[in-house]
Amino acid sequence: MQLTGSQIVIECLKEQGVDTVFGYPGGAILNVYDELYKHSSEITHILTSHEQGAAHAADGYARATGKVGVCFATSGPGATNLVTGIATAYMDSIPVVAITCNVGVALLGKDSFQEIDIAGVTMPITKHNYIVKDVKKLANTIRKAFVIAKSGRPGPVLIDIPKDVTADSAEYVKVEPGVLYPSHEVNEEEISNALKMIRNAKKPYIFVGGGAVLSGADKELYTFVKKMDAPVTDSLMGKGAFPGTDPLYTGMLGMHGTKTSNYGVSECDLLIVLGARFSDRVTGNAKKFAKNAKILQIDVDAAEMNKNVLITEGVVGDLKVVLGILNERLEQLSHPQWIEKIMDYKNRFPMSYHQEKLTGPYVVEEIYRQTEGNAVIVTEVGQHQMWAAQYYKFTQPRTFLTSGGLGTMGYGLGASLGAKMGMPDKTVVNIAGDGCFRMNMNEIATAVRHNIPVIQVVINNHVLGMVRQWQNLFYGQRYSSTVLNDAVDFVKLAEAMGAEGIRAKTCEEFKEAFARALNLGKPIVIDCQIDCDDKVWPMVAPGAAISEAFDEKDLQAQKK
Image (cartoon, rainbow, N blue to C red; front, side, top):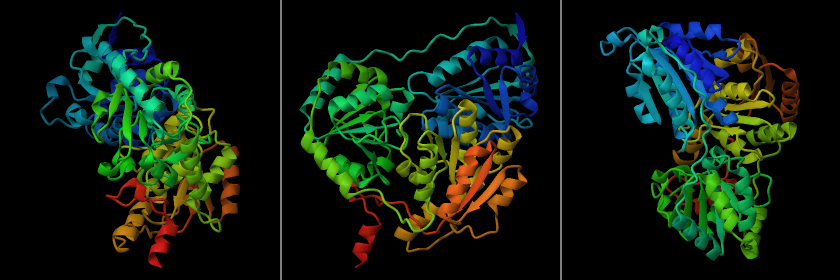
């Protein structure tokens, strides 16, 4: 049948099972929005306050559900406002399809009103992108975009459609999307080498990254860990792939990882890296990283092998598939002395914080207690992000959503809206610092407009906490542009946008506020007042090895 380009866009989204789109209309994309209006009973549209919020919401939807997130924007500034959100998804390998519309084909390249080469702008931060100048190619382009976004190592894809193409007509035939299965092609020699390394190891350590979440390999991972009888650490992106409550779990690795994990990885003789890319925040000084170990890396992306850290052996393939093969061939192993040593580290170096006042760690632990560990936790970027990763025990994948690679302040609120739309039966909590919350706090209005009952917790220390922590420790306490000593009242701001606002200055006040939030059924902002000099411990100084992690007690001992 003959359909217009805008009708083809909507029909193709329905083909792909898209039920929610996040976006903001404008002149160039009007035809698509007009068609979307006619299908509002099939596809829910969430009108965000800003296009960046739409991109983050699509990202959060994708992370929480495992499906492809979709966002819309118009030409020019509408499209460029998506860029930070697209880059965030790209750095963390999140499947998002961004659909923008542009000026008509005849006006392209002429500096027309609200024209921008968004395909050129986003080329470095998309897995692939398209500009569709022929309506006959539109349907297949959209279908290919979804396949590319979710296959192999996932990532964002952008489709730019000139306005006249959305009005032109072409023949449309519905196509049911095929089921994407992970490739089972794995090099037998690589598997054999991996098994040999695993069997020869006396002190193995397993390091889990975001690839374990993206591949859905949590069950295979659990079996592998138990067969290996090895301790487990993770990256920020790997949270929840292996249960944080398991005795073999030793906490996060890297700059703000536990001493147990940092010391253990530094002393192991085999580091098995599962779906992680050796971020500088994990490795510290890369030349000193795991220097006593052989390194076995398993990753779907061959480009990650030997990119940041030289490895001993690698297996290229989907992690779920590779772990399945290893589990079939691996006999039960035992490393009692090594496990005993690591457990001793856990006992000697527990995570701790000041109990006598309201702090970020207390807030996170109280959220964990009241949600019984079953919430979807979203964060912004900074101290609160690290506290959430350290003190909330994640036991399921896709329950910790955070900007790991790009470190995007302003990510969390939009992402929490997307997560709640994708997982409406889950409690969704966004934990922010006051600096991050300011970035995109306008999305509280979106939550109220669409009645999306997210819980917004602001860890309010009236400073840019993580930057201040560096200034305090490494820059002679010169607090350049990090003190937020203004009169912004987040409780009044929440109320002005139609949400509820509560201020908490004590542990008891927060406990009561969060209990109310859980039963409220509407958007709420809890403003938690904490000390401006609370810090994230442990910490690895820039340029140092992770084995040189220090905490508050170590710092005090040095001063004596």
